[in-house]
Structures are given as C-alpha cells and as structure tokens.
Length: 306
Image (cartoon, rainbow, N blue to C red; front, side, top):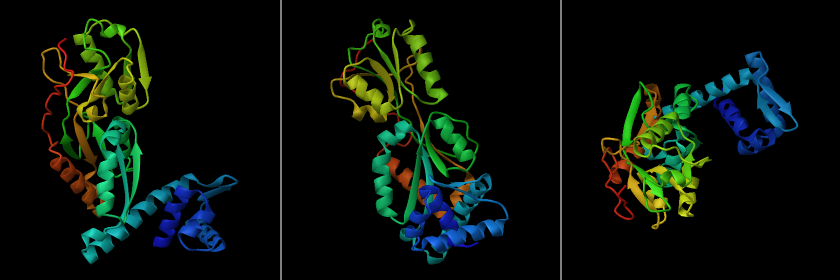
C-alpha cells in the first residue's frame, strides 16, 4: 500500500462516497473501486461496508484508517524535513478545544494559523475538557486546548489563567441570587464542582430555577437578554453586554478563582511538524495577547459589592 491508498482511506472517511473521493483524487470511479477491492485482498479481511447511504468502515477498516493517518503524516513530515521549508509544511492536524475556548479564541487563532500555514489541513473537535483529554490519550486527536486542571502526565503547557466571573442581568446581591434564574452551560466535572462549591460557600440557599444550556456563548446571550445570572471565564467577558453586571468569583477566604487554559499533547506527537508548528503558534498567540499565566485585572463596569 502507498500514500495514495492512505489518502483514499482518509478522504473516504470524510466523504463516505466513492464518487466524491474519486473526484478529489482525480481518479475514475471504477479505478477507485478496484483499488478498494485490492486493499481488502491485500489485507485479507473486509474493510468496507457499501450501502445506499454511502461507504462505512468495518472494525478492521477503522484500524487501518488510524494507521493510514499516521503513515501519511510520517511521509509528509519526511518531505518537510528534507525540503527545510517551514512555510510550506503540509499534513493533517487533528486538534481539540473546549467549547468555551472555541467560542472565545478559535476563530482568530485558526485564521492566523491558516494564513501562515495554508497547506496544513485542520480537523477541529469541540467538547468538554475531560472528554478531550481521553481523545488525546487514545490518539484520536493529536493535541487539545482544555480548561481546568485535568490530570495529564505528558506535555502540559499553561497558556493562560483567566479569572472566573459572576455575570448578572441585575445588580449583584447574594441575598437575592437564589430567587433569580441560574444559567449554567454543560462542561467538565471540574467546573461543576467549582460552581457548586462557590455557591455553597457564598450564597447558601439553592437556586429556585436552574437553566442548563449546551454552550457558554448561549449562556452569555441569555444573561444579555435579561434572564438571570451565570459564571463564565474572563476571556468571554467581551461577549457580554455593557449593561451586564459582573463580579470576580472568590472563595470563602476572598481569594479569586481561576479557570486555567492548558495545551496538552503526548510527547511523541511533537515529532510531527504540523503539531510542533501549531504549539509554537498558540504559545506566540497568547504571548502577544499578554495572557500567559498572568492574573487578569478585575473589570470595573458594573462591579457590585455583595
């Protein structure tokens, strides 16, 4: 099997269509079908399931697909190393990011990276930080940008340490908070524990109405619309209306509460040129924005005394 075969497998997973893959590789449909048949003969087991809704992979096909990604990346890394042209680095980069990080940073970050390295193909997975950690461990993605303090034994880079804020459509008064809608976005257990502990230490009485939404940005929009209060990281404050009240979250001893942003990756993955370039770019992005490990200043507008 060769690099064209690896591309066939990768494109077939994306498209689920022999006709679409043939067009992408400038092949005829019969020649691509023949090549798929030859793969199965060479491996000796069924790799594909052809249905009216497209082509699907068997378990053996899934394992071969994972191998194909690594083999194609090794080949592209070799070409990059031989040519010594860092601005023409190519390859497939599979990254993950927490939903809130994606909403606050990813559009700008990815736009700058793509402008600089146009030949690198990007695949972005967004989900909760604890789930992303599992994907990195299983090598389903090459690296992830997560929030909170997840247990990770290998490369772990602290990118930023933003404060957590309480935002509210009404002036902040801990005595009346329980009577207002509490809006929470779905996240990892670490954030759930932080929010619950803060509420128990500072407010006490359970909220009368709890509204759960899928993502942080929806949460902010609901507060902007005048509905209740929520807890968000400081880097999402720019999404808040100027009329929204905000206050730094503090523990029972008055210390501010942070929600750190980490980049995690298996050490072996840094051999890949696209992975190494992305890590360097992300570090530069946060350095230029003055966000590396520096506590953020409290926002003055709408600050309230509890």
